[in-house]
Image 1 (cartoon, rainbow, N blue to C red):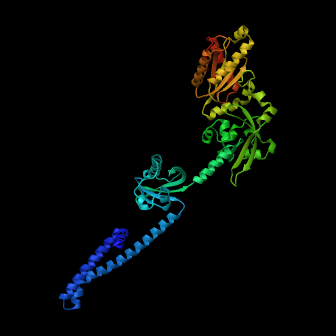
Image 2 (cartoon, rainbow, N blue to C red):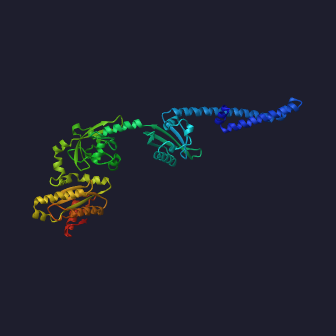
Length: 485
């Protein structure tokens, strides 16, 4: 009886139908022939009335045999395919359009802790995974169905309280008319690889040198040292502003920069490789606008067109030798950058702002009636006022804004701005902060501001002169105000 139940359960409906019709017809004709034998006087009288039915029975017999043969072949193929799927090192499943599992392999059953495919079929992701992950998986399925395209992604999953990483492929399943009826997915456990990758990344990030992987045009990889140096949270954020680290090389005669790339070379790395190792030095400015010097080491990566490039900071020796800090960077009294810095690096600042789709705004300002401060309270007090002013301006300006002591009580503030009005708002904000600040040893201090935007293609001196005229107009109109020009 159990065998019969199993046979019926595993036999397709069409074959069962043929079997029932065949059996019924055979029984019916057998009864009819028996009756004819009892009533007839000869064999011919028995056979002739039933010849059509007997032919039908014979035909049905052969049809049944062929259907049975095809069913056995199909069942064997199905079992072979299932055996193959069960033994590949992947988790495999198929879902219908509602996200219910319709077929799974052994890898899937082991992953979710089910004993048989029947126990998993009809369930969905919420039956096996935490709610947030299940929603994410269903969202990916919906995207594959909506786009009708294969999706490849890395997903994190939680099984028995342990986190795993899987590399997943999901593709829509189509019916004969081209409609999407569900999805099929393949996933492999890449937790070990992810852990090894994380360890490698940690090791690389612990290196003090800047390390990059590049083809000479675009960055493929960079360690934490690069992000910290330039003040970015991620490589993607850096690449929004720059395609290549070479875009940050300072155009200084004592260092290699893009202006020194040979015409016959495809990129800057080829030129550096043609130079003596001791001559491979570059200068770059960090997030705090400090200049650094680096030696550059280059190695080919495998047999690809990529290079591993390391930058070792040698600023402590090179900058002293070149007197870069003393000659270029800071004003000794206030700590602001000086005019020599402006002369060497204003073009880089303009280019940096342009990479952010911003223009370079020049805020030219000085202290109102500063001569009276010196005459009344002495030059030492005047120096303290200058230092305190720079402290206030830095406190209320943004990271990346550049404060420069132009001379005496005159200063420049270089800021990124889209419009002149935006720069005037920045200037007004700082003017108010200066006016309300308590400067030690002197009464109220105010500043006048002349604001302009650098125009592409013009000499920087033209921009400075325009800002100076705006400052003069602010003085003429009564001081302690902002004038844009």
